Length: 190
Length: 131
Image 1 (tube, rainbow over the protein chains, first blue to last red):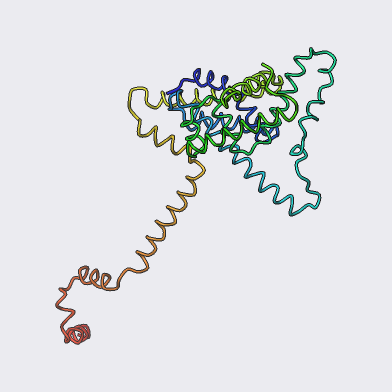
Image 2 (image 1 turned 120 degrees about the vertical axis):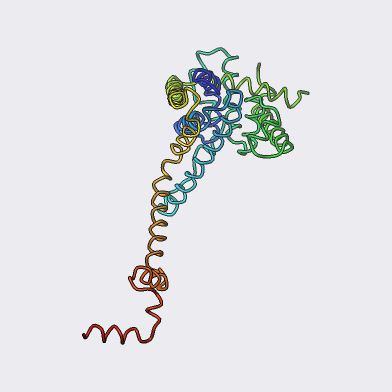
């Protein structure tokens, strides 16, 4: 049974990654914050008696389900919007070009060192590429490599086979590496 | 040639760096959300310890927790239960067989049941009452 302090430590450890992960998926920072908050509340409400060792998988599962609920609501909302409005346009962010994102901060061109600029450019490309990944690939990549789950845990969290996890991860890494190469970055500057 | 895992690690290090540079507003909201969740857990623990401090009340606590989680469902369940009970009682009152009513009449009467089977009984009663 986890104590409030243990829950606090766990959430402090994962909240930033959870927010970024959700923001990549829903492409809306405010919605991402709401989703992460919902997931935190559900974890504390529904699983207060679970040991803290189970929290990473439980939290990820709750987070994924909360995202799916958000998409379902969005789908219904979009349906009504389409029905009642002829002005419906797609989300312009879908077509965002990473190169446009790179030009978003002019200060970097003048004030920051070249290495810092290149690093932030690489980061922007990676983030844009992650946001464009198919949902399952993104989910598998983030759980497997960012949350550092093993293949079995990732499969259990995603509700699919271990083979599917490996396939999704491989494709995601290949796509992200290709995105970097496309913009002239042979590898992330580490 | 880097392996998939090496490439992934390099990408993840960039993502870590990106998540470390979140806006103050986002960090504040995450902190508030975390405190809310922790407060919720603390309240749950406090209620749990109050209910079962000496090892008693575990069943009630479990039941109470279930009720709390499904509190929106409970009014509907109670209304449905009341409707079922009302239906059963109504059926019992309306469809009570006449034979049972007859039995009750015979058992409640002062005369023995054989008296009601005698064909001359009604005549005898009429004649006796005329006197």
